[in-house]
Image (cartoon, rainbow, N blue to C red):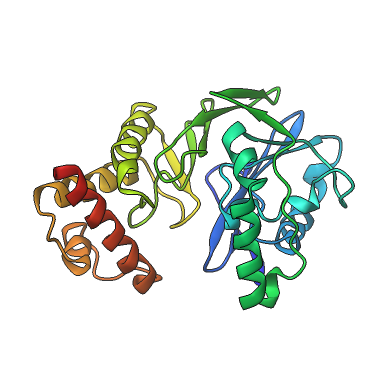
Length: 269
């Protein structure tokens, strides 16, 4: 099982946890609640995060948010599900609940379990509190606005903390760039990124790529603008255009670049 470690952020009330090299998840410590944002790919990784939260859990209720239904964000839900070791309300979009209850999700889990013993004990649990549109969590001192952020996936939410101007962007923003699974989703993702830019965040915390300032939004939009102008752009050329010589998980992002090129060409047609 991967080891979960904590990374610093500019405000200790927003805690960042990494299962390297897969994903970053978060916990927002408010006066009333500890709000866990995403649960990693397994309950074991989620349990490591909960142990690191330590004394912050004392005297506060526990809430969980699924930004979306992808395995590295929601397959640790069993830790918090009814009857689990740490039952708590799990908030997510209505669509995320539908996806996690679907036969397709069960089939994906079965494939993962066949190929990797890490997932042997995973049982899918959808959010227990679902909603359409936006939802606000009042923590007493901090507000968490759960905002629709589709494009990377149709069920995705981002978390905006207006008092801090912190944006927990899920996979709507990434370093070096986000991606779309389906060609038709590219205009939706671009609209979401523009909506997130309008928030004028001071700190952007995506689930892949580490902590950034608001320039991450501009870098991501610039990447797709380059593809629209030059759809034959190679992965290496795209990195150079962003001022990067290399990135972690380069082979992974090279494949994702191919998906984005395909979606861009479809949009241009």
